[in-house]
Image (cartoon, rainbow, N blue to C red; front, side):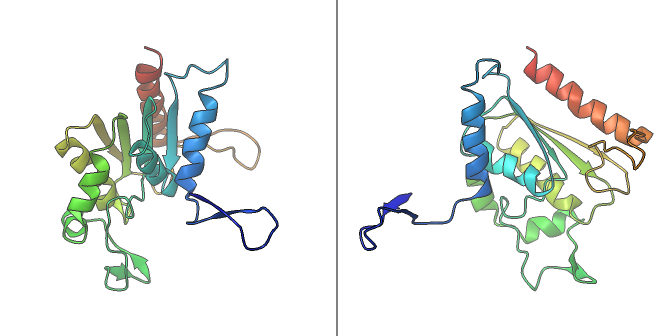
Length: 195
């Protein structure tokens, strides 16, 4: 919320609370819908890790056509305890086990957010990821809340493996798992955005 600065005499506008990156994403989606060359009823979002969590946060506040959440580090969205008592190995939080995540999450708070989602979501996990339980639980609780949620997980050593990046020589050489993951989320977008 904007707050007028009546003290300094400089006519500034202050923020009563810090802006969230998800607020920026909501503004971007609103802007995209105004562009004449964008089909406002066919906007999809894809994000990895924190940006995957942002998609869930934004979907709880507004709607867009569909989202792909890749390895969504949704611990804030699900209210998962990430404090000093969270399980760690060599300083890295270990939430691979969905049941462990469930015991350390505030389901009531998470479900209150999830119930506001109207946007279909495809969750893509990574079998060996230390946060796989968080990825799975986000999907499970969306299904429990009656939301349009799909799940797929693959085994790959790289975080964000569905995104295909150029090699040092400028060429693309995705491995078979990367190709399958990329094709999976693009097929999801084709199905949802080209209706």
